[in-house]
Length: 166
View 1: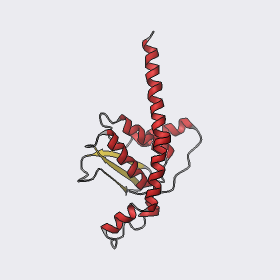
View 2: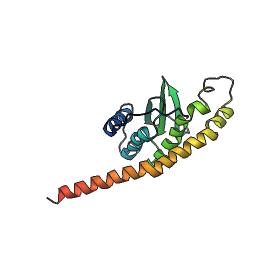
View 3: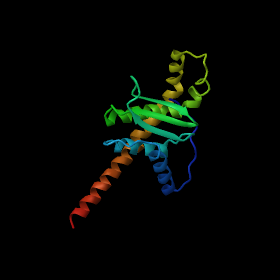
View 4: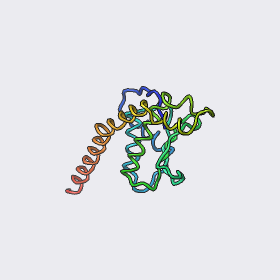
């Protein structure tokens, strides 16, 4: 549920796209009808990279939660419920990505502390640093990612239309 300092990436667009696809596809379980969701994950790794590797999973074992974010084995693990429709799943993904972005500033140091109450942990996890991270994630999604994916869809539709006219 929290964030770290972004890594710097090489300038090569092809290398970035390859790295993003590799990071985004390796640990994920692709679910039927979730293509857009996983394309958003790939774009987030490009536009808002995290300081640790990230695994994005979809599952049903989230008990009363739509999603969560934690650090496990040195990687971020973001889980999003499969019971959500794709639009809701993207919203939860953006929320959890903000947690990953703000991890060190918000809760990274106290996450393993046994002296913090669940209430205080939640307050820290959704505090001002998380709010700033969430606004960054949402702005990036609305101004970059959604537009990029829409343009890709239009280009693909246009290309398939040209192929069909022959």
